Length: 299
Ligand code: NCD
Image 1: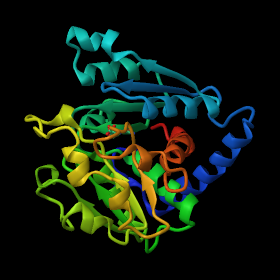
Image 2: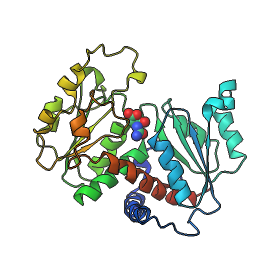
Image 3: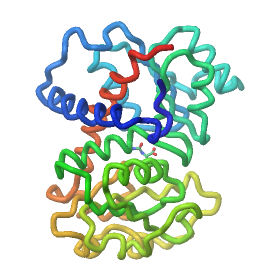
Image 4: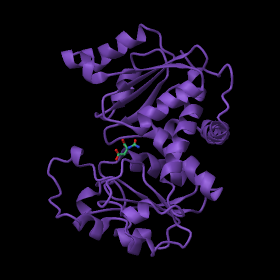
């Protein structure tokens, strides 16, 4: 079994991941580690072709907490730089008999390509603008922890939707769990294949949750050409714009944040409203649940 796209998880696996995430969140907070961990003696390999702070570190932390041995290939210093294909890198690592491989890659579909040459389960930690299934799961688990339900929540996902694998995975998962998802952003950053719900102001109006997305300039051919402060003013989450949301609104962001661009400092740092650091904490718990689910399924 692989976790390449969020829609691959059937109802049972989805419930199990969300349930086990809650369990691991509690265990991690108590600093108690199951001994021996359920992944004792297993090997988890991380193969990250793109920069990462929270996703890479949380997969490493999750694997350690489960008692697995984890290694992360420093791609910049690997044979990838000597021209090795993705498939040959996959075959090389496969010959070392890992138990799970976690991959992040700038090309859409790269995790599926490497999964074809591997005997162990593969987890997609983000491919291009396509999918980021563990981020959607950690966002769902964070919402469950805050609201006790996802059913009926009005969730505005705002910003650079076009380049966001986070938005794509969440737009599949959250409606499946009963949420109303509203996607909005600058017209030039809205993909053609999704229904927009109008302006950012309209999306935020009455929302229970506002999830802001980073402007992914590294994926743009032409820069937005915006003046300093212009993006925040027109599309970003300022205190004034947040007032249009429900009084109990929760603010989310997958990170890394561009403070002063898509989110104002005082919104990001509002402890009553922000779930941003809980998202990071939940990331470890969710990745523990995913590793636990997949590690036992070697072909
Ligand atoms: C996101 C990603 O890499 O897709 N970050 C993350 O995994 N937490 C979003 C982003 O880079 O803006």
